Image (cartoon, rainbow, N blue to C red; front, side, top):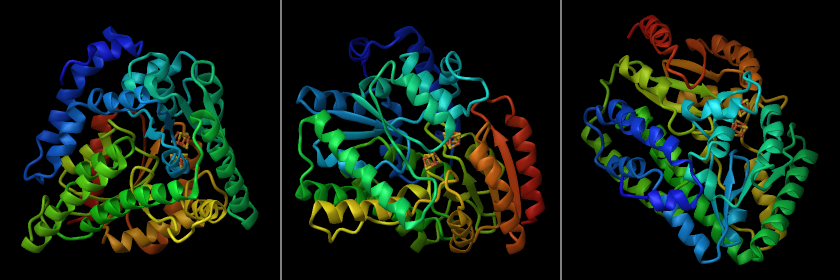
Length: 424
Ligand code: SF4
Ligand code: SF4
């Protein structure tokens, strides 16, 4: 990585501690990613982004701030980035995916909080992630109890604005989300000093739709057999999409797709065509959480789709681009975002339908239900997921884990037994 020490110092980061993180990441990435055979050349860009993860994009965000722009940090796929970009600001994903940040979170949160929340809070309070330092304002949501309370603690250190996400999907709940989007517009306008005009919102809707379309195109290639890209690589692309510039991201993902589509024509894959095809469903995997994908794929089976927020929940469904008034656009945004099926909703049959649909579309041989420890929502919904998959005759394995490496071998044994049971 180039020398960004002055930038990190100016951000008030704990350089000594941050050096520890910088020391382990390249080795972990090399072992998990660069050791893969036959990788698409288009992954070179995404490898570069990881190698400069705390440098290039943070420097761009700081430059934007120097020009008078604002940066908003988000934690959930229900928060409409379109509103932020329409105000001339930048949205960047902030979820923490490393065990490195967990102890920092545990200083202020109960130990039995999900690792994603602990890592996100730790990354801010320990001052070891530039993205968490740069964001002028965090946007939280009322999705789960752990997050709701964590916002209050983070708000002591950085301004946090919270969107009240309904927990049901009746017409009045969609209308309530519309109201929340209107309130977000007002907040973003106040904070940036820029008006969210319909023309700018229309451009932002197209910008984010294009990013979604590129990711959808990438995922479509994974429906092929043999699969032209590993699940690990697809996961990395999806993780990077949360904080890269959306236009550049769409360009680079589309470039990768050109190559993958050619691979499909040439019958070229990264796993044998008869290897068992795995879907992972459940809680999100924030960067650099590559643990389960690595276990599954190093055991010989490709992960071909993720029913998660670092998978299809992030990009499925587009916002209607035909609306020209702010009122119509807000309605279109609310309708699109309320089609996401997170376990924080009750009832949540849409998620089960999605899992069964994806299993067909991606010709899945088995489903691994991945739950982060202490995530009550997804762990409880597992019962219904298992029931539906059993009825559909699709083999299922449920795993509960955290970000640590302690259970790595145990998970590998369970995944190995599951793949053997698939008998391919
Ligand atoms: S799992 Fe639910 S709460 Fe978490 S990012 Fe996804 S939609 Fe948001
Ligand atoms: S994984 Fe579960 S507990 Fe953790 S932030 Fe997401 S919804 Fe909340």
